[in-house]
Length: 329
Image (cartoon, rainbow, N blue to C red; front, side, top):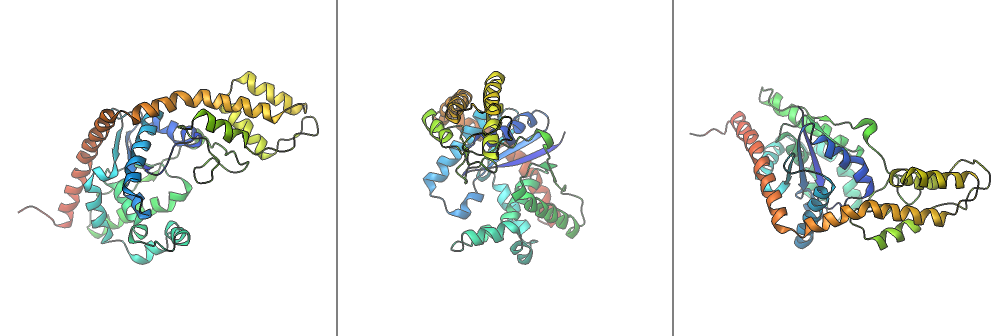
């Protein structure tokens, strides 16, 4: 059984793209592997969030992932800042990370381009903290998106460097977890690309019905087909992709036939799609709200997660300190 670790952004809200993409796989994966899922709240500090926003974002993210199916009794679900061993290992790894290699990382160069007024040490050493997150639990595999592939490679480099410098084969070299064909890529409502938070083209699991209807009605389309059996342009094909995911087969067939015989009315398609999305998200949204308002349950979840995560992390840190020469008298 592999140990698999995945971080959860503390500033993220789950949209349909997340749900049908990584999260559904996480829910399945937790029963097949030894899984650690953590809310990366220390990483969020590089953008200097307000304290009240930070706390509420963590609460929302936990509520959403729990509502989506992560089981704290099966997987280890914890908040990064509840495990101080991560930060001590981060400090120790920083001693063997070099400024030049950190400055050359793609994510660092992108961040300083986007926020030149806030180029802090946390941004520079982000890959080291990510490495600590991963190897503190001796993870075999890490699900990563394209934007994090280089940081995972950096984690492998730091783990390998530690082993080499101290003449040990202690840290595993984590591999990317590949979902393969199981990873569904949900398109956005803007007609191009995949659904995302920052692009403003997503439907969130916590969206109210009125919000969903407005978003779907604003979705990009074209003037409509002019010839029978014509090829769909990307924006229209994207709407049909969502229809395939969320509507009944006969509904999909009705609108597909209407498109191919040029009788389709996009307004009707959008109204139907909006209602099908609402039918799908309503039980999840209600569950999110129930969990968010149940402070006792959330406290139980995070305390249980911290206890399990610290048991794993403290063992690693104790052994690392021994390797480095920090031994009790």
